Figure 1 (cartoon, rainbow, N blue to C red):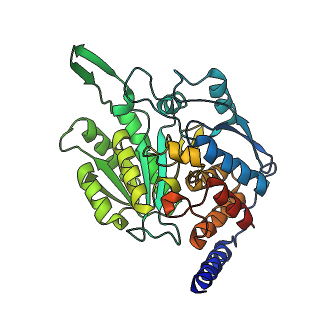
Figure 2: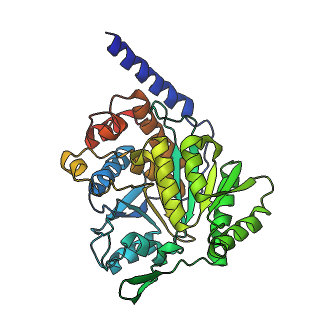
Figure 3: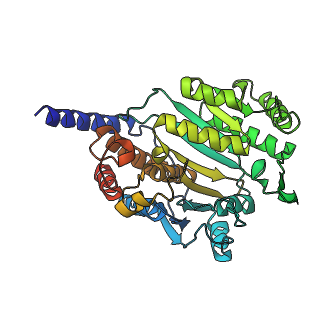
Length: 366
């Protein structure tokens, strides 16, 4: 009886949350803004088809003004097929599941190929507490913005002599400045108060030193935003001890993926953190942090992958496409399901399948 009353209480909280978040400001579109937009869809490997399928179902239930051009792409391919690249360039927006990256060997990451060919220089992962989801730390709301095209991901490696491999880390002023500008612009447009640059300039004095120098120069143009710096190893320690101190974080490539996955784990796990990659002309939206769950065979076999992260990423995509009311509806429905707590996948302490969560979100759509 008490459990039943508790569930009713959580349902009331979820419904109240949705009412409180309902938009009170009218978005005035330009003529033609409501025209359906084509989005390239890459289901990907492992859990990818499960979670992208969840998004397709929810978009259809919402009658969202988007339609998908779907292509089968696997991380085992040598390169992204030409017709896929043409579709993304034409549509300018892509939604994708995870693409498995082979460990070792001579096959390069298709994720890196996509980012480089489309010049998606900024990766953004939003790590925050979801209402009703208990985590070790409360009041976490961190945005990690990483440079996406150079650093250790430049892929410039060669064997000098047998048994000795040299890998080049490339840092340029141009790329450092533009990622810093993006981070400060994001903070300014989203009413964020602080930008923290993550580095290892105490050891890599030239490479990370150039990154820091670029961040400092850009910071001068945003006097209303506080700027500070933290060494990457201290940053990881500070994240797990007091993550609330961080707001927007800007990082070179490798540090960013480490920091984003750490922050995701603190705020609820990789299954709930949205993200995307953006450049001047194109954007790809995907699960914000992966940490190896893309190829989890148990999740695939049991159809129990958590669709929350990609659903929230698709809400980011809807805002990018200038459909804010649809984004709000999707986010509110997703938050209400999490807050209510009845339908949760195993990573969130529940027993629900992917489809159970999808059905619950569709039921909550207003």
